[in-house]
Amino acid sequence: MNVFRLSAVLCCGLSLCLGSACATFGVSSSDDEDEEEVATVPVPPEEQEDADCALKIEDARYKLCDDPPPTLPFDHLQRAKDTWRNFKDRCPEQMRTGLALRRMEKCIDQIEATPSLYDDAVAQRRKAGESKVEAIKATPEYEQAARRLKRALTAIEDASWAHERAVQAGDEKEERFQAALWDEAEAQYRKARQSIEKMLTHAGLELEDGRAYGVW
Image 1 (cartoon, rainbow, N blue to C red):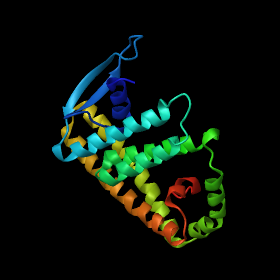
Image 2: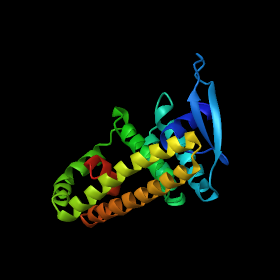
Image 3: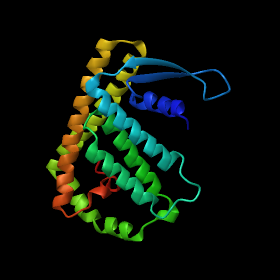
Image 4: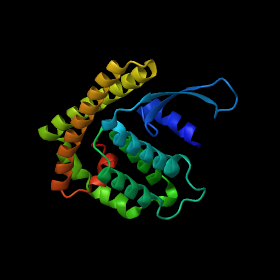
């Protein structure tokens, strides 16, 4: 995928940015799928690191899941997990990065489902932890955090798409408004997820198993 195709994917789903400008694309009617119309709008300086990080995450996700090598190396899954962890540790906790990291987590799920990379030890560990997870899910604290998580994800979806529409329309006031809503929703998501992570840790469960258990 060339840089324009990658950027098109990002902007459509993430309102992400290249360099100092965010590119919004409309696919041309040409048979050449690489031909696209490009319009740019400035990115606020305070959002640039978030935009740059999200683009790097999405680029890594694409190489790992959308365009992997024909024969996956034995450490493909571990490299995906390490990539996610490295970006999470060094990127800002902002709206675009949060969304890109969750897309990377889904990429990890996709890799784990590959038969050749099946890890029997991980499967056994997760099966052994199922009773603890069910006990956690039965608590009022988890139910409250899960509701908060669901509300945040819904708000993120609504605000991210509204933000993209505002970018495309050149409506800077609406763009800033939706960006603020999106960023706040991401903050609420992080708080809810951190609450659930504490419950898993307290029960002696691995955080990387959270998605497999369906707790977020």
